Length: 215
Image 1 (tube, rainbow, N blue to C red):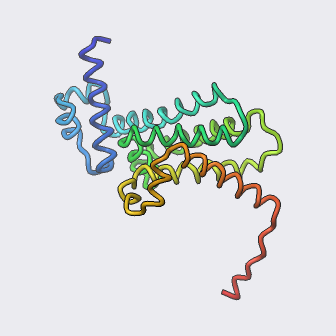
Image 2 (image 1 turned 45 degrees about the vertical axis):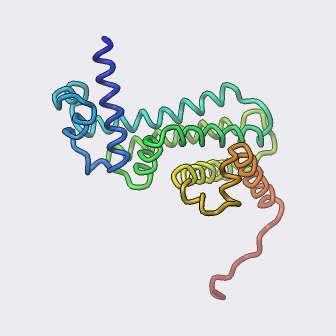
Image 3 (image 1 turned 60 degrees about the vertical axis):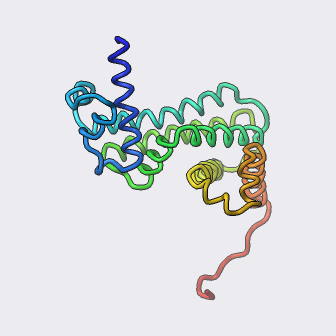
């Protein structure tokens, strides 16, 4: 592929990512993407047959970035469960902070679902990434909690990271909280310890039953 064509293609994807992340699928037109990418509308349709096709390409790229991060961790999957969980927390938070448009796009699609095809793709790709996380957390370990608890652990970590990455300016109003969140290593260690301690306690100590009729 010639350099100019490659640059045009990449420019279209980047422009579409930023626009879809900021405004959502319905509010963005192909004309807007073309204008932001500094190409003509026909150039966009040369690469993608429709706006939805462009959106799916953008969505797939965002999920593939997450998959690439997880596969890199799996290739160097050493140490105890706490160590692997901490590396997962650090890598995921770095990815979110360094790619805010992808972060917003994924959150928007997972929470709202812009198109039927997009919703189906998000479901499949998200499920594939969850399987990668389970492999990452279970390799070489014994006496682990049930898989459902590992999935809940990963979801808690990912959603918490997404909220923190998206709301850093809010936490600046709380000095004690901002201090630990500003120290990435300390935060990831604290998150790993909290999740693991909670799982172990839940396995050893049964919580009292709650009678809803007393509420």
